[in-house]
Structure formats: structure tokens, C-alpha cells
Amino acid sequence: MADSADGSDTLGVVERGRHDEIGREPSGSWPELARRTKRWLDLSTALVLLVVLAPFMSLIAITVRLDSPGPALFRQVRVGQNGRHFRILKFRTLAHGAPSCHHERYIAAMLADCHGSDGDARAPAWTAPITPFKDPNATRVGRWLRKTSLDELPQLVNVLRGDM
Image (cartoon, rainbow, N blue to C red; front, side):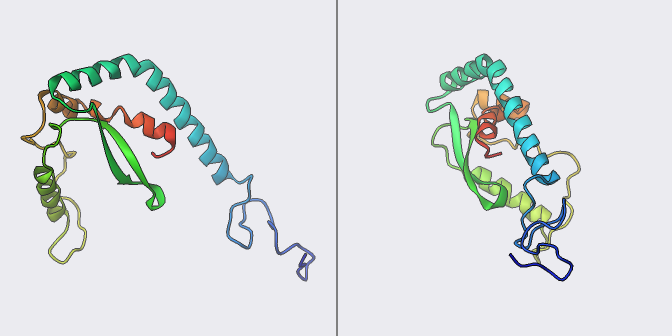
């Protein structure tokens, strides 16, 4: 083990709250404790909400299936923390197999509003939260789910998995 001139160990943790030479946090540090506490809270809250909301979510899934053919859940690959890809779950709000061109045009217009022609980000022109646009492929139930944000409920499963 390498010792410095003052007799302290230079390879390990020098004192509580400081990084070791590799740059890692010591195992008992506050950031690690905070991360574990937050994960525990996320897991317990998501689990309780899933159990309590399971009958309601089942009813929504049945309603989505009755409103239009196709699966009740929509799955899409998204990019999460540290660039990790994961599959997000939502209740399906569009007709099954509907083209995404309307949504792509909406996102392009929104991004053009946020970025100038030089590509620099600037403050958005809107002041109110972004509301779902009127997609002609949205189902009747899908429009209601979007308006109430209930299409997001299956994301509790993503929280349980640790994706979100």
C-alpha cells in the first residue's frame, strides 16, 4: 500500500465525503444513501399505486380494446438516464397501425419554435404547458386519455423496472 509523506493511505478513501483516487464515491456517502432512498421510495410508491389502480387500469385497457382493434398498450423505445435505452409503456391513444407523420410534423414545428435557424436553443415561445395536438388518428378513448393524462399510468411499470 502506498503511503504519502503525512502517513495517510493514498489509494483508499482519505476522509468521509471525499472521492477515492479513481473518482468513486465512498459506499457510505450521502449521494449513495440519497440514491438508494429515492429508489426505495420510487419502488414502494409505484407498487402501492399499481395495486390500488389495477382495477381502474384494467377497465381502461378493456375500453381501449373495445374502442379500436389492436393492443391496449403502446410500447416505444426511449432514451433514459445516461443514454440507456428502455421500452416505455403507455395506453394506446392512436388507431393501431396509424402513420406517425402527423406527430412528426407537430414535433418538428415545436422544435423549430424552440431553435432558431442557427440551431441555438432559445426560450420556448409558448408559456402554457404543451397540450396534445389534434391528431386525426387519435381514437375517441385516446383523446380522453390524452386530455386526462391517464395514458401515462402504465409507466408505473417502468418505474418498478428502474427505467424511470
